[in-house]
Structure formats: structure tokens, C-alpha cells
Length: 131
Image (cartoon, rainbow, N blue to C red; front, side, top):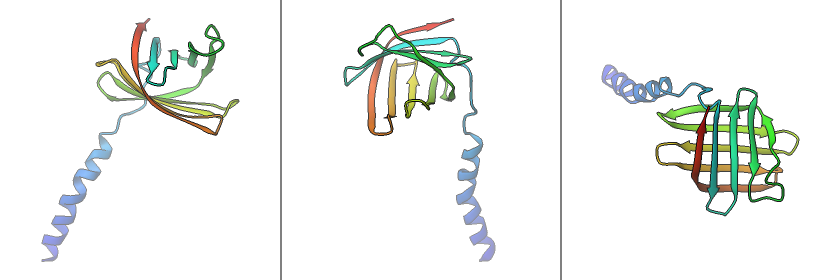
């Protein structure tokens, strides 16, 4: 009976342990990619990923020509052609996470802005450029 219980426990735990091996490793595949997108809230951004970091323009803001950044970023390729990227803007207290799907041109964003405001919206990617 002990052997059966041990086997059942291992049979239950193995998929959990095996899935940890399948976690995506950090990637720099986004370097050289620029995307423009519009959130369901109406906000539009242009974001560019470069080796020195991510920079963006708030296209529907008061200074659409101003680039903010670069900010160091991290990214995973969670599925082929789908990325999760995040960065922290220390000077402003903003923390941003994007889930980018280049296959269907959709993006999901979550942010804490100035340590106070929460942003959680979906967006349509309207333009992608690759260097």
C-alpha cells in the first residue's frame, strides 16, 4: 500500500515538476521591434524595443512626439511569436507589463502608474516594424 501511495504522489507531482522545466527563458528577440497599438480605453502608444531598453511615445497624450525611456526591460517568449515584456520606470513609479501576440495583433497591458493608478486593458496592434 505504501508503494501505491508513493506512486500516486509521484504521478501527481511529476506533471507539476515537468511543467517548471517548460518555463520560457528570458529573450532579447524583441530588440529592433517597434509596435504601435491602441487600447480599448482610447489610449495609443508607440513602443520600441532596443538593446539599451524600451522607449515609448504616448500618442494620445499631451506630448505625442516625446519619447520616454529607454528603460531596461525583461521579456519571455511564452509561445512562438507571443511575448510577455515588463519594465519599471523608477523616476515615475510606473511598472508596466505587456502580453504581445504578433499572430493575431493583440496586446494586453497591465500597469501601476505613479504607484497609484491601475491600468488593465486590451489593445489592437496597428503597426509592427522590425529592423
